[in-house]
Structure formats: C-alpha cells, structure tokens
Image (cartoon, rainbow, N blue to C red):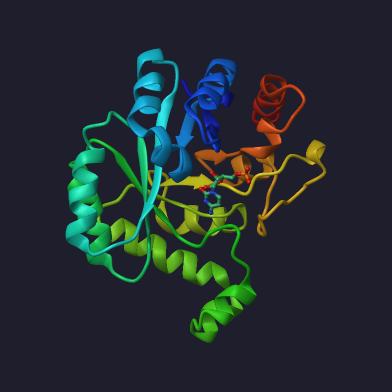
Length: 236
Ligand code: C5P
C-alpha cells in the first residue's frame, strides 16, 4: 500500500555528485522518489541514477523536460527507457506528435509526464507570451487542453500546479497521474521563492495529487529528514 512518504518527490537540485549522494543518504527512508533535474543530470547523470537504483529504496524521476522535434525526442526517450527510471518529462508544447514520440520512445518502460504550465508562470506571463484570451483569463483551460493532448498521445499523466488538480482529476479520471510541484507547507510560512501558484502538501493531496514535488522546504530546513517526516505526517 502507498505510504504517506511515497507521495513525496524530492528534487536533487544540487550541482555535484557528492552533495546529491549526501541527500540520498539522508532522505531515502523519508521520501518516495528522487527527482534528477537538468543541473545534476548534466553534471553526473548516469552516476547518480546508478546510485539510487543500487539502493533500491526510492524510485527515480528523470526530469528532463524535453522539447524538440519528434524524432529527436523519440531517440532521447529510447535511451531514457534503458535507465530504469519511473518518471520522465516532456513539455506539452505545441505538437501532439512530439508527445506521442516521447511515449513511443519510452516503450512502456517509463511513465511519461507532460509539463502543462510551469508553476513559476503567472497569468501575466501567459498574456505576454501571446496566448488566446480564453487561456489568459483562465489558466485552467490551458492546463486541461494540454492534459487532453497528453492522454491522447499515450503519455501517463501531467505535472500541474495544485490550483488545477481538482479540475484535471474530474476531467481525466483516476488512472491519470497528477504530479504537483510548487508545494509550500504552512510551517514554512508559504515562502514562495520563484514559485507563483503554490499549495500546501495537504491541499494538494486532498485535491487528488498522486505525488508532490517539494524541494527547498526540505533541503533548506535545519534538519531535512525531520522536515520530510513532518510533510509525510501532514499527508497522512
Ligand atoms: O520546492 P521547490 O520550489 O524547491 O521545487 C523546485 C523543483 O520543482 C525544481 O526541481 C523544479 O524543476 C521543479 N518544478 C517542476 N515543475 C514546475 C515547477 C517546479 O518540476 N512546474
């Protein structure tokens, strides 16, 4: 059965193998998934993937947020499919063909998630990027449109903010995986950093998130393991 800690995806947002290894040691009993982003993957990609895989305690989310022509995405995802990771990401972008290429490249070996609208993006950013008025007035509509694209393309779920979870769950059903970043616990004073659309761990999970991505409130805590335990207790 899924435990409260299994909901927690901890991003290893550090620039060296040594720092990442320390965080893996410290947190593997307290989180369910380690997310490896671009910074760490560019620095020491396979080394850190192998370390987490050897420990066998946590799943891996290889967050590459790919966005390229379908053939390039397909070929990159074929390599990702051999790395024994649980999640990977592609930007929803403009074309369903690219999303299908991502799903096809992974050959069912990795759960491909579509990044809908980054939680660091606000509605004024959407206006400035030149989106249609209906999407500027209501960002839910853009997230839902992209969720439908992702599902149709054969990917497994999306990354979206806590503010859109209920609408996505209602529209896409229970099997569709929802991963939510931009999480800030009340005890961290809802400090947003560069995040714009934030929710608490409890709000996100009760709205229907399958996983939450929570980084700085754990990493910057005086005791990161205690912070993760506190978040799991809130989810429970
Ligand atoms: O909790 P914190 O703000 O530190 O989390 C930052 C992490 O969340 C980064 O690894 C970033 O890539 C990830 N993130 C994401 N999707 C978003 C926003 C942030 O995966 N829409």
